[in-house]
Amino acid sequence: MKVSRSKLAFTVLLGTLTLAAALVVSWFHLFNVRPNERFAVVFARGSQLYVAVPEGSYALRVTESMTQHFGGNADYLWLDQRDDNAVHLYVMQLRDGGARRIGGVRAAEDVGSWVASRCGQFAFYTNLAGNQLSIHNSHTGNSELIAERMSAVFMAQGQDAAYFTRRESGAMMLYRVQVNREPERVAGVVEDVRFFYDHLRAMVFYSAAGNLYALGSNGPPVFVAESPEQVLFEHYQPGGNLYMLKDNGQPQLQLYVYDGVSVQRLANAGQLQVIAAVRAHGRPAALLAYENEGEQDPRGWRLAMMTELGPREIPMGEGFAGGAQWQAMFVRTPEVLLTQESNVEGATFGLHGYELLQHGISQRHFLGTQVLGTVIGRFGAYVVRQEIGGARMGIYVYHRGETMQRLVNDVHAHFLTPSENALLVLHDVEDEIGILTACVGAVAHRIATGVRAGSVQAGNHFAGYINTWENGAGTLWLSNLGQRPPVRIADGVTAVLAVN
Image (cartoon, rainbow, N blue to C red):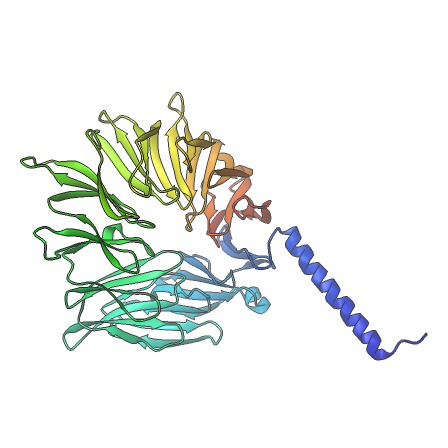
């Protein structure tokens, strides 16, 4: 039987596509990487730098880099190089085979500060003097000067907008620059500009005519409050609550909170002496101390919190915060106020907790003693405790309920990921070699043994580390924080610089 040429061509094409699809599936299965979750890592073999992605490892033109940033879904690598006291900016499009082979291209020379956009295609950068702002498009290879005579510039990695101030006609103006848009003047005659950012968002607060405004990466400015007496910027975290003291026509100042939507009164701030802690995210709450009549030291601790019935002030009782040293902090999940307290100067701390209920707080719960420190993550509190005998430390988690759960013993070092979703712990270390474990909530995943101390580099999605250390080098591995087996990247690695 004869087969037509068209059918034969179709059959060959179908077979080729099927084989290609099978190879792609096999590749991602082999490297334990989902197609929408690309890994990327910058590492060194002596004086030579490399970048590794699922397609392989590639030498970089840059030989000495201070800052590296991955844009998009590990689609771009931006990094700088110091050369004869100057700093130059380079970019590599990681999905482009040709760009990978040549090791990246120089995007700008003699830069001051720089950041890459969220998608990774663009980068904002200033000149050495810091008074000119430019943007580079990695697709076209072109740079464009977008602002001059700047007084100050505010920008952060992974954001799609930058902000700057410029003096015009004797007044300070505030501008915002978004990717692919001309700079826009968003406010005139501004004062006290404050810039905040995390790995997801950026926010600017500023005063104009005495009033407080908020400005995000897009949209118009938002009016926050009229003539606040004091704004507690030191307690603010992006996307959370902003606390302020206001004169609302009352004999005494009031404590207000802006939750990103509206401003609400939280407490009467008359004779307020100290604000020990505030709840940055979630239901507003603040731990306050008032001055007793005729006494100079702060007394009368109260918890001001927003309940279903509105704001409420709850006395904390006699003896609260009476230790020689103490610290208070709020946990995001669950809703808990933690206090670390010591009764004797120089003693180790005991940890106590109060659950924030719908209408108040629970009784004080004793959680543990010998506490050396507490790391607040997105899903609870990781507590570092001194173990029996005092020579070793353990990591515990306070996640739910009234007791702490031990996760890891004999801790050498720990690292909270930038997203605050996981805590990496290096433990059981001997001769600078130990075990690496990822703690996510109340679950601990052992990642690897034989890990070199000082080699662990944590990113939002992956963690890089070196093991099999011998003669100053070892094998680089990459783990997606314990979710699947690690990927072997390269041998002879001396340092890990950046991980996405």
